[in-house]
Image (cartoon, rainbow, N blue to C red; front, top):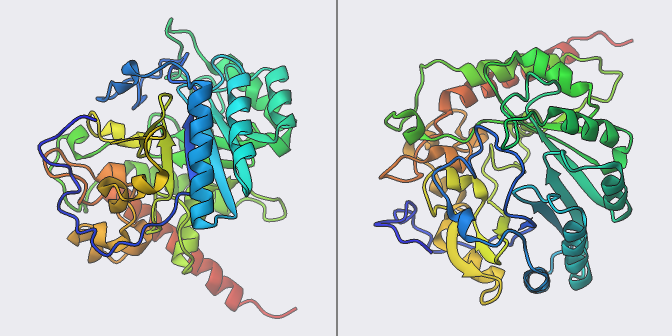
Length: 399
């Protein structure tokens, strides 16, 4: 565990905090990737700790992790958990390690286990998909859109495009909807939003999760604070997609877009279920290829060692991780927000935005999101559309 002059959450008061047990376990199957995406926060970012870890998780680490998960399930009497099999590229050496890890967890725990593998698609052959489907492991794809131009930043280490293989994977998954978990899509402002959205629909995913690129106040060299009035390029991009999604033919089942559904639910008074918005406590934890217990990977985009806890499954329980100040800080709800967020009229919907996007060098994470203005733009737009829908339905004449 690297040391720092002061951890960014040192100023947060975690006394009296009641830990929320982990229900999502991100298990690193492989620590390397066959792609060299230009914007990758893991391999192109400030944290190079991946170089010091094993390329893949050993059978011993898999068994020990499964034991620790089962221990956590028993302690907190959990009836269901999710395991996310990740990398690097988890299918880099084929499906066997993924299947082995999932089997180890399922054999160890006494509760429902939902298993998903998140892949770039380049190694998802028909045979691999068949084996994953037979094992009840769903597959999520990481793409930047449904066309070659959208995925120009996703290349291998020789500069060759990943799109042909990824497209083939998407088409295979579309023929196996029971195994299709959906698509993660990082927003590229250079791409037309309607073009991206329409191209993704052609891949027939059950859901799409649009992601803001991982950035912080240091990335843009700005002082932290609420940044309105300001340009809202990401908010504008997302509102265009929202309108297309919202206005689609209601006789069809619309593709799920997680960010939009979460914001709409929050506006209607429901609790959040995603870390991008809302105030629900973080309930996910990562296990690295060497068994290290870490916070979410995205923290690595802030600075080297930001995700580390100093714990591992060989010596520590997941309850030990729940007491780590960094993880406790992610479960404090309003208590972890900046004053500007507490006084913001959309603060409880935004929830300060993704925790990672609040970071400012030297002062930590207790700031508004660097995407503050974009999030407010999107939230207010969705609220306006929801209000219009309610008013229209109220004033309709009875048939």
